[in-house]
Image (cartoon, rainbow, N blue to C red):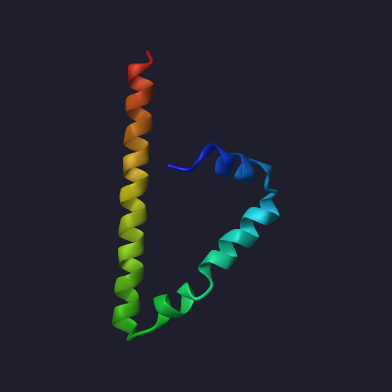
Length: 71
């Protein structure tokens, strides 16, 4: 969980500040993500897609439950 101070700092950031921070955090990861054989790289991206799909499913389920319980 992020501290209240950190949340306030993020809220004060401009979209370009947030984008710059995101790009900075990704530097170096690209090399690791794209290294290996074509099959290894494909597996890395498939795992990322699977994790994102699972995260999206969990969020949609939680949203649906919260809407259902508020009625």
